[in-house]
Amino acid sequence: MIVEAVMLQVKQGMEEEYEDAFRQASKIISSMEGYISHELQRCLEVNGKYLLLVKWETLENHTVGFRQSIEYQEWKKQLHHYYDPFPTVEHFEKVHLS
Image 1 (cartoon, helix red, strand yellow):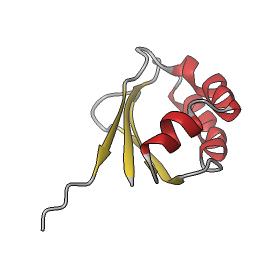
Image 2: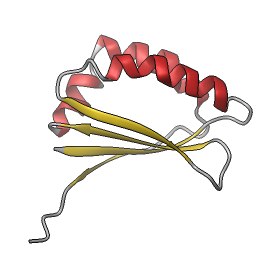
Image 3: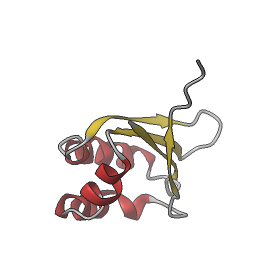
């Protein structure tokens, strides 16, 4: 399993509209192969700042399966115009400590 982590900055004054759009777009991502779960966290200190965490079975489920899909084009259409600057996506894997 991998975790996709994205720090999002939403344009000022568009936060409520963005959250509504994200709720709708959540149906898209949750239908994708290899998707496990996702959550959107709102920053308490910085207005318009969010943290998106998505769990995928494999890196390729995100980078190929989702990002190269028709569904991603709809995701992009619904959400990408809210971001400024455009976010950087990073992927993480669990470190086994025992």
